Image (cartoon, rainbow, N blue to C red; front, side, top):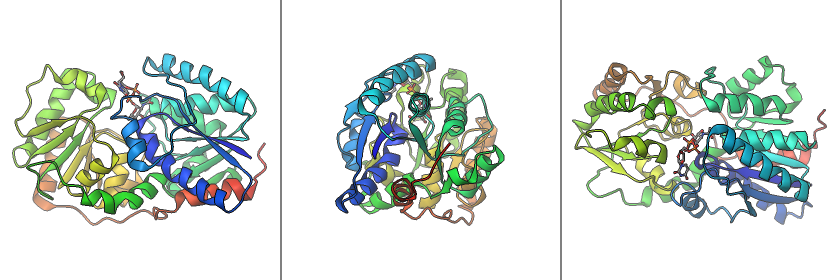
Length: 363
Ligand code: UD1
């Protein structure tokens, strides 16, 4: 059996790292299979890509498609054209894609049309918000995948409701949390940036087009974050997309602008923070596992389990709602939370077990 594992953008790298590991461990047990790692190059800056490979100990990709940035159609199309050639020359039995970025969609469609089976890791998440490109990527990828690995039962239920046969759905847990649990001790030994004390600062990340592309919206959000910055430093590692619009804004003096952090320093930073304000997908899950309060500045989430049992609260990007939610955390601390089932560090092993051993027959 030959597997191609695809990664393209920053949030993919922590999801493939434990899969590479789990495959490598099975390899030494003498199984006859090979794994080829393809990086599409959707993210290409050292701070968005290379540093993550180094921090996570992921081997150099076997193939880098170096597609770079562009409009959604350009980026998706470039990945498809380049990945088709890879599939033709490598003839894999399976293509494994993770998450919901443009590379996930592009590689799953390309493989499926060549008659190659597709496995989707982190399947079934739904925000029901079709203005999010990631929601379109999730829906399309899940519709054509042969094996769908979910992080929680809510996601499995979404797939069942959409008519995905039960035999294709596997609730395995969360590979991103596998990586977090593997790295957290090392991350905690990293020194915090100068001037920060554990639980004495907050962390802010923003990159969603709805929040950062219109400078007025971005200014409203940053104004609301001022309620936290009045009390403590707010560390703000800036995504390239957001950087373009920051220059024109007057920033609170306690907002500490930084370049994107690599994985271990960022994990250490979040773990020791008082609260996180974000519009990311994955950070909602990481804060839930770390027990750190998280305000998600989006109107909806594809990860409702983090609100139901974890530390996450949705505020949208309305400045008043952000201010009120932040004030409530500053005043009352965090509500009771727990870690979702099977977020135990073994999701990747379960996935590899299914792929190697169950030999499911798919139509
Ligand atoms: C992408 C994903 C999103 C994920 C996010 C995490 C899609 C549709 N979106 O959004 O799901 O949460 O990554 O970061 O796939 N850029 C650089 N250097 C880089 C990468 C990007 O400068 O290494 C710039 C590009 O020029 C581009 C902008 O950042 O204009 C956006 O990059 P892109 O990959 O298109 O989408 P993201 O907003 O990063």
